Length: 234
Image (cartoon, rainbow, N blue to C red; front, side, top):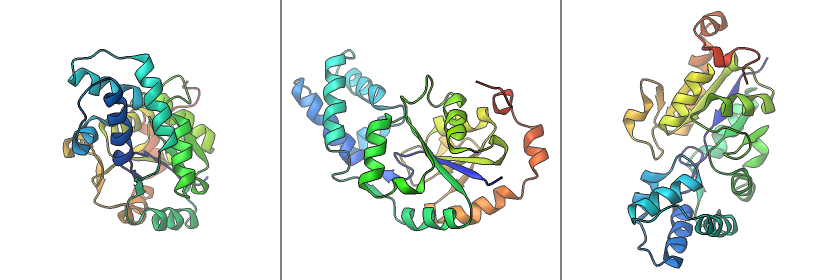
């Protein structure tokens, strides 16, 4: 069976903070609240749009607001790829991995609709056999069920799968699901979020790093996998 790599989206494949910050600040402005700098928004990304807005509102001493969340979603969906761009080398690396026989999928806490529109607009969607959004399943990262459900859609095997992301949620979910975690150092997450996982400095490092991962015998990976990675889980 082919190996599968699951990719986080924001901060891993695409620098999305410029458009997230723009839509978030428009939403805050509509509520009479002060905006955030782009770097401040980057620090709040990683748990989906609802949590991003809730964090921003909390910093402005406001409670979560369903009406503002709906506005945020609508504004962002309409402008999801105005300034967002794939990280340098992303297209070439995805093409190289696919040519080498890797199965590619996306597991993101971003809602599925804007995730798909972003990937379509940036001409990346065709690389992926499955896209698991933050609202695609009953759970999302760091719950391992998010990765396992996305992996099933992709037709992959947890014992022959890798998760690449830039956030602690990606590393935690991968380990709990029995996947090998890889940490994207070019993203939004702090260095300590790698928590001992193998790291990559740039996405173009992936082909060589993944070859190393494949050298680990399957029986060793299976022997050390948690119950969440075994058949029948979720």
